[in-house]
Length: 325
Image (cartoon, rainbow, N blue to C red; front, side):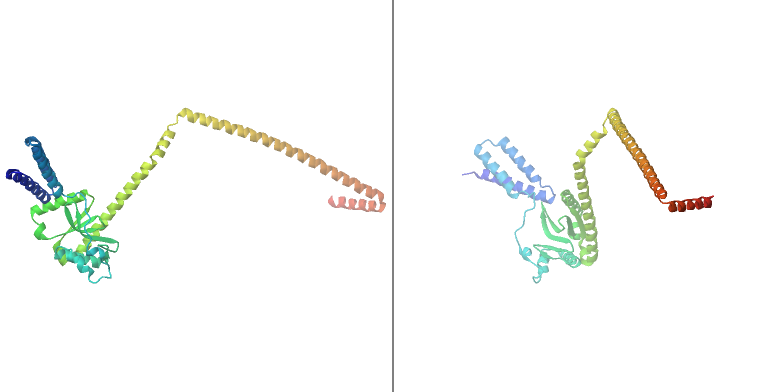
């Protein structure tokens, strides 16, 4: 059986680990638990020489650490009444109000439901292009409200968030959540209670700014991807631009030679065409002269064969010549 001293020492280790976990959560230092566990491990290997006791102590150290360690990722919560609610259910809003932790949060929830026409949808509230989640666990924290999966809204009561320690704690919490990509909006409880319209106005403004930044980030990422995709083409253009002057000169000379040869061939073809055209014109001229001469001979033959017709022709010719003088 283990002695009371050994049992008491193991209990002291477990208590120290639990204390490190509690203090780490309070000061947003979750790694304190692991530093204490590493310290006890180093102590065990340095000062404990009995093998069974070494194994027992390591089991206690890391067993307790694994049991109480903070979870790095969001663990899905068990299914609850909210996940089955629909807009047809009576008093569905009352169930969501029940998950609020203060009257100020209830007032803020009511204002959001009214402003955006929210209705239940699988444990969330949706409407007006907005999605609302409540009491969302993220690492060591629980968010009051989460809008569109990225905008956190915290309703801060003066009693819990006005002291210097609370302000520092909230600032550390905001930095940790911002590092995970969240946008944080803190609204004083008195605003949600007495000026809900102002609270909704702040939400609209913060949401618009956040969505604009997300759109700019997506556009920037798209431009980077397009630039990376175009990089091979730019490299090819760069290589093309590096052609030497001698290559350019040779290309121009070859082009000029081809142009000169083409013009010579064109001129030769035009010369042949002109020669054939002149030849056809000369042939046409001779043919027309011959046809005219044949026509005159035929007329003269007809006049010689008919004296009356010849006399009439001569009279007409005499009159025509007289008129034209």
